[in-house]
Image 1 (tube, helix red, strand yellow):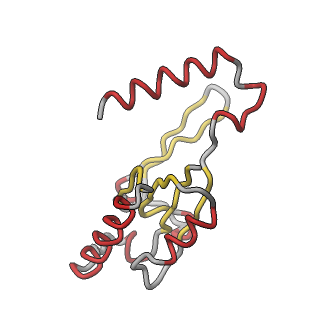
Image 2: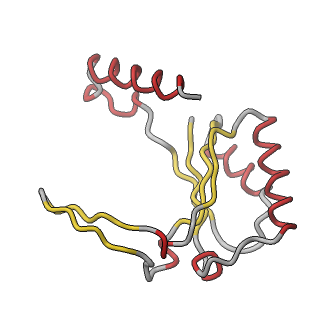
Amino acid sequence: MRVMVLVKASAESEAGVMPSTELLTEMGRFNEELVKAGVLLAGEGLHPSKKAVRIDFSGEERMVVDGPFAETKELVAGFWILQVKSLEEAVEWLKRSPFRDGQVEIRPIFELEDFGDAATPEVREREQRLRERIEGRN
């Protein structure tokens, strides 16, 4: 199963405070462990929301809202995408992360099988072609 680990923003990350060399080194070691174990698919830090935009959808209307956004507790400062056997395995990995403060959220990513009969053979074929094209870029 794939999971997305959402690293919650903090007042510091939203203010643009960069992590220390020590934390970056520890995070690099942790990411190396994830790679060696074959579970890391992607992972990045994100700029503060002052550099972001949101798009609100209402029917055919689209409204672009510039950051920063007020509710820090609802913002994401970074992410990992992991390939693990279970949610419990993801939890065990993240318990080993170098974080000392803050919060992460681990959420399973939908797989095509999760959509049941709505994922018709045509939908499955299109999805497969898209994945092949994406993987071909690497």
